Image (cartoon, rainbow over all chains, first blue to last red):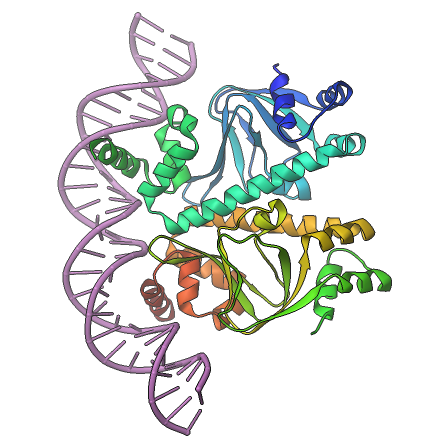
Length: 193
Length: 193
DNA sequence: CTGATTTCTTCAACTACTTTAATTTTTTCG
DNA sequence: CGAAAAAATTAAAGTAGTTGAAGAAATCAG
């Protein structure tokens, strides 16, 4: 598995020497998921945080009518997991599923704690990760209050152009909080206008 | 100003001895806000995190049409601020305004950093605070995707019963993402049903 | 490659929510 | 307290988004 993407990703925020990088990689386990396989199930505890080396996943909840509501997508170079469940050890409310065949590098909580001990600057890295997730969620709440469906779709495409190509519209609709039918209508209007 | 509420709040998560409590209080500055006064303005950097001793505030954005979208409320015993701006030193996207005459205890970033040095377990406390905020936001996104306006209102009242009594309906509507007119209709239906 | 499955599109009828505007009720603050 | 301002209610007309159903297009798995 291509581990250099993980190192690169971390080095966007903190610098690692060769020994640190080696130790770090020794604490991450590769994992492969077939399309449609589950990485996490509602009610389980999320034992690892996963770095996506290749592929694509969705984090979602299921309501009582069986409808999916997508909280986030992840592709190469993103981190995925239920941070809440991972940090507190409590049951997750969410499912995580591969949308494509996916390769991950996973770190468990004990191994991450060991990493913090031996490479303290990694605390900084994960703090930044948490901050960024927090900010992204705050923006999303703001947008869900400020924008109509067309505006939210436009922002989504602008912010994540790669996703538009790659993720089925049905899933994008479940992220935006609208029906696939309505998204199809919006897209038609946009190409016309 | 009543500082014991702050100590109590912190002791819900970490235990402080007398000396630590004293040091801690020495780093917090009291601040009083008249109703309608601003604690933070969009475009400013959020220099302090504030603990609410008494009163009530709202955190909101203004869209291009001048409509308010409320991201959170805070009352006695809550922390308020723009954590993103506070942590990164970048401009805030939000306004914070007092809904009632309000008393705060504020800590600046340098003073908080000093506190971390001298009372390391305070890092734990603020990490828990960040985690809780993160979880709350995640749940809110999930609800905005899963529930209609009636469901969101019901959940809001269940989760924050105190707010229902205290905060004008207009503001609650701006939090739920609906118009005050529609909220009024929902309430009428609920008392009937 | 092929049949089976999933996804996308289109349409028409429907519902949740908004807008505007007028009236009443509550709150504010001098 | 009392005048003025802000908030809440009601009703009617309008719009954004849903639902269900059916066919076309794309994708998947053997």
